[in-house]
Image 1 (spheres, rainbow, N blue to C red):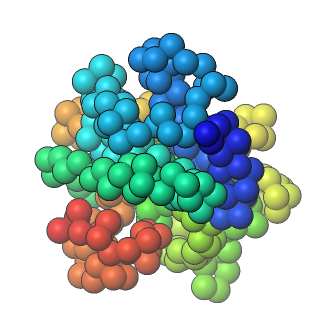
Image 2: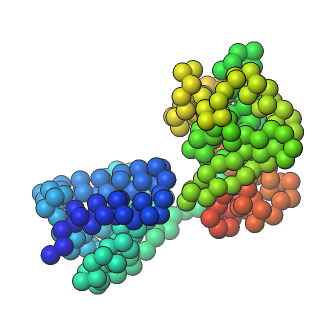
Length: 291
């Protein structure tokens, strides 16, 4: 008998700590296991503290994945993300609990589900121009929003990378760039154009901010949440749609700006390997979605 609880605890306190997993990754794993444990409880009546690792066999995991799609209306992509989190736990369990090697192997053999390829949504140059014209730059928050959107469009940073930028991460002199820590704790440097670097420099001078303060803060000086970025983006999209009606028919998220950056680079003749490095993709397969 191998109790599940200490294995799960060890995964968080030992494995993820050793990997220096980001808060975003840890939260994603935690949400997956919470959903799984709730599913097991509803199916078997067993509390998480009572579960044995052997009870999480391939049949149960498969039923959980089907539950995500049918009962929770999750997409195939979300199902695969949840399965990736389960695989991470079982790879850790394989080293810690070799007596369950057969069960673990069967769970790890559950394939990734293939779904229909989704077309990448991106904004055209005219749509991007309209969006950047929407914030009222006569107001401090308008300047903040304009610069946040401009940096997002030019650098293709993920929303968590964008909100995590500090004033020290923006270098506005020679070799202007922003520095961020992305997925897998990988640090990367993304160039800025001279005009945007000059505008950022003026913004920093106006604020008299300390190096460790958020580059794009809330009114109270805190770091913006991902939801706050979506709200400000939606607000400015509504304004931009008045002059660029095609925006009204598009579902635009902060990740759409990342897609738009990638498409701009691709249309400028940049090769996919360079785009992959620019966006911080772990491999070029992720970049193939834009082809």
